[in-house]
Length: 410
Image (cartoon, rainbow, N blue to C red; front, side, top):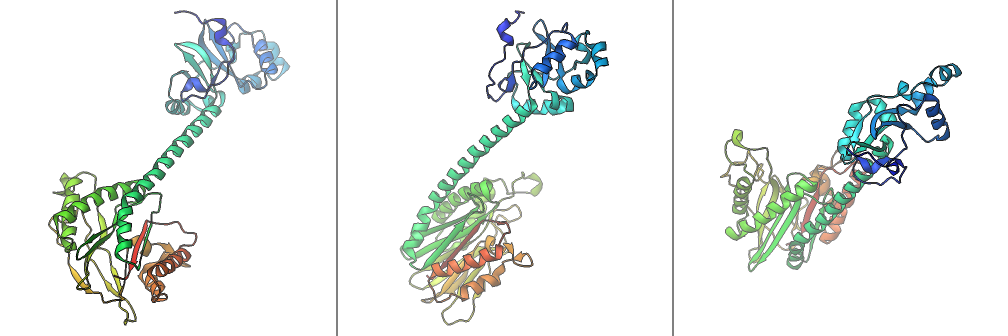
């Protein structure tokens, strides 16, 4: 084995690389023959020196921690007694020694496992078995924090771009709604940058189809479910008639269960138990009727000559979940919608938001009150009234879920 040159031991600039060698400083070592008095003088000259490596023929044999050493050599008597002796007297004979190519994450675990002395004194870094430098645990923690911050930044930017993609995928549906209904307000606010709520609107010759849905989860998992479900929904509409939202729900239920492996006996299934709640409907232009089918999602209907809403409840059965039967058939409800009828449908993120003086849910009653107070206004004004009431209710409470609602006059 070749011995390292003299330049090998010179102090060099620390390179911030994601492995042990990147956080080490090459401190000129001492040999086992070095006396304690010489080490004492070395620490006196270099007050920033925390630990001093002891190296024999290029191979590290120990580490002298400043605080431990100075404590032992603090009195004239101890200096007189131990000064002429070898520095191995107060040397840690079992320091943590790692290769310069060791990953910082693995290194951090080894530092913790090696004990408190290593956290204070640091560790020795080697290159091909030879002494390379001394690593500081403080520098290690700073480096890991910086790496984590950079990783978090990259993840945040990725999620932000995923949000752009998610909104772009639903842009066509939003544009279809705007062209189809000139008095509508669609609010889509994910709790995080991306979310598990989605909507879909499609115009046909004799009417239009709409869907507002809440997939399992929020954030990135929820967004994945929206991509899966919205794609399956398009296929279901093509396979079934858009005039039959209940059939589309059933078709979507079967597709989700098959795709996610959620069909069959529970004991044979995997860990996935995902699906959606939502409202699917068809509006017939000529008949002015709304055909409605829903999973755990109510429809609020306010006729011009009515004092209050009629609430049309959906089935109490989610779509695609393990416990949902493969052949479940959702109910179809047909609602007359004469000119001026106001309709409102929302995911549970609006209803379930905690707030107010007693920290209770926003609830359906406050939704109705917010709408009734502005019932003669356009849908966008009514939507703003709902959002304002919701925000006041939420106050400083964290948002619980994604928020999506549709207010429209067909």
